[in-house]
Image (cartoon, rainbow, N blue to C red):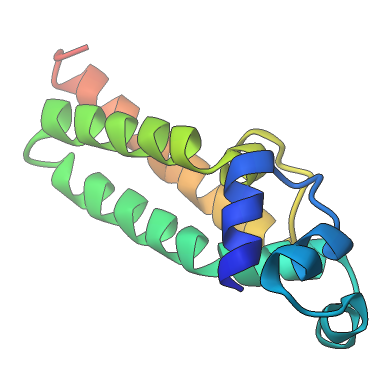
Length: 127
């Protein structure tokens, strides 16, 4: 999983299972027994990041009620830093058709929350 995370972060979702197996020092068959596809592997690797992304979005939405500018800027920095650090995660965020159905649901929810964060900033006239 650590090798997959490194390769996905560096190279994005185009990483092959064979490349991951080589980086992990295991045979390809070992990886194919555990993961039926690259998407399945990427979903497992990116699952924790997606959970953190959802939690951060919800926290910044709550914060935007009292501190709309702080929430908007903090959230923006968080998302940009994540996209710089992990190419695969950036690809999932910028391409809603990628990833599992659960990822797409999370992305839809976070997008709605982001719209509310921006609206709170607009309503407070800080943007």
